[in-house]
Image 1: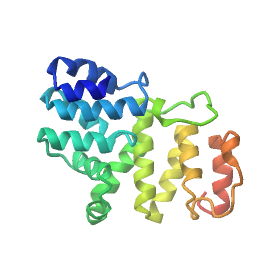
Image 2: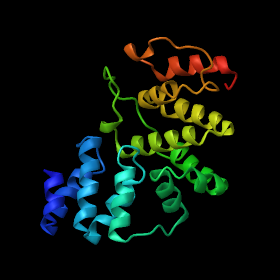
Image 3: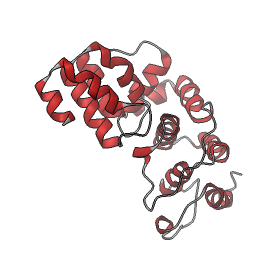
Image 4: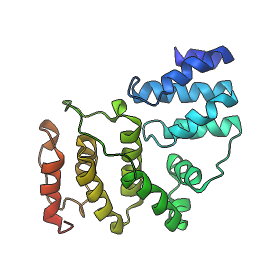
Length: 207
């Protein structure tokens, strides 16, 4: 439906699409992604705040960045620039401005309100996380991809402070040998809780 609304280009669809982009966990990442693309096709300026927020969501940030570019938006603050470059997977820009990159991503990683663990699913799915969890996940993924080892203690601290199953899954699933330098076996079939993840990561000497 969202894809059709975007193709039609009817501005009356904007409110529906903004609801689908929502800040809570009512809609999956795939719904939010399609909604972001549709909002870019419609080109209504009312969509900008939601799309800027979408830059902090790893599941939808690329679609949000493309939609914002289509509307004619350009980032103005340091945080907007860093989130925009993360969305575009622009590693060069982020590493060239490493001081600003770390300031923004560490605030996302460590500065959010405490996040409670959610009920475990057989396949943990960041699609259905809260806005704070999506921001945390986005920062974690970005820092892992940038590959700077000095960030690893901050990732471990975020896991400890948030006590979040999804973050445990992301860190262990990254196959980063500095985080977990030994084979984990088939951890996907059991619950990689934060406590279990921290115990595994301690073998690397980081904690």
